[in-house]
Amino acid sequence: MSRVSRGTVAAAIPTIRIVVDEAERRLAAAGIEQPALEAAWLLEHAVGISPLMQRVHAGRELTVTESECMRILVSRRARREPLQYVLGTQEFCGKAFQVTPAVLIPRPESVLLVAEAVRRCANLPAATVVDVGTGSGCLAVSVALALPEARVFAIDLSAEALLVARRNMVQHGCDARIDCREGDLLAPLDEAEWLQKIDVIVSNPPYIADGEMSTLQPEVGGFEPRLALAGGPDGMEVHRRLLQQAPTYLRSGGALLMEVGLGQAAAVCRVAEEGGWFRAATVLHDDAGIGRVVCCEKRESRRETLSSNS
Ligand SMILES: C[S@@+](CC[C@H](N)C(=O)[O-])C[C@H]1O[C@@H](n2cnc3c(N)ncnc32)[C@H](O)[C@@H]1O
Image (cartoon, rainbow, N blue to C red):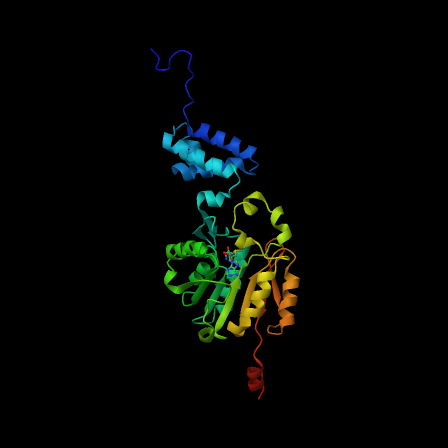
């Protein structure tokens, strides 16, 4: 006699094909742009089978535990939680970084900050670099890996973010060279010890204007930390504060490199130049042609200028 009693319907055996197809339908209904790809990545995370092998073994049955794990991942993504938080990782500068909702998900355009910091320190045997607002630690770690002799500080106001940054530093074997400090902008640096000694300050500060916070896509506005996004009425509050604080710590010729949002570069350059501490600011553009990083190089002090002219 059949094990399924008459009148009852046997549940479909959840094979890879059935589970991936169902996940794709749910993700598409939730407005996810690439539902088939993401369904395959989520299944890879749940059961450890690559998208290629999912196709080869499409008829393989999933265990109850595997099906349940996949169901939870798909539900999270269908609520528009960023894929990176669901998978717990994001690639940056060729390395995997752990991410949680305590940190901003690293963006590809921020590589510009790393490249410029490394370029400026390439000929300095033991450069000192400060990353303000380190989040996942992606900038601090990438700079430390590219400059093995450099000393790096990683500062954040969020203790939770610093825990994630610390894990990434350990994972990439550079925790011994990066000094993590909790606090507001450059305040955690001892002023007497670091007065005019820093070579480069990099920062990807929060730069979304208050009025734009409600227009962000659901993945960003609903899940990424507000502290990492909100930059005050015009989005440039943190840039202004950094431009005021940085000259105390930068050596002459040292640089403050700041990421900016769409349309902010010219205004940030103006503020930098009005302060009188920096040479004419320059702007680096990202692959989309958007002014993305403002570079402010500290002028020589008056005393140094006089002595070099004599
Ligand atoms: C846009 S995220 C950048 C994270 C990371 N550096 C990156 O590029 O992916 C900004 C970071 O600055 C931190 N932050 C915001 N205000 C701060 C402040 N006043 N002092 C220090 N860190 C701050 C936030 O907690 C957040 O981690």
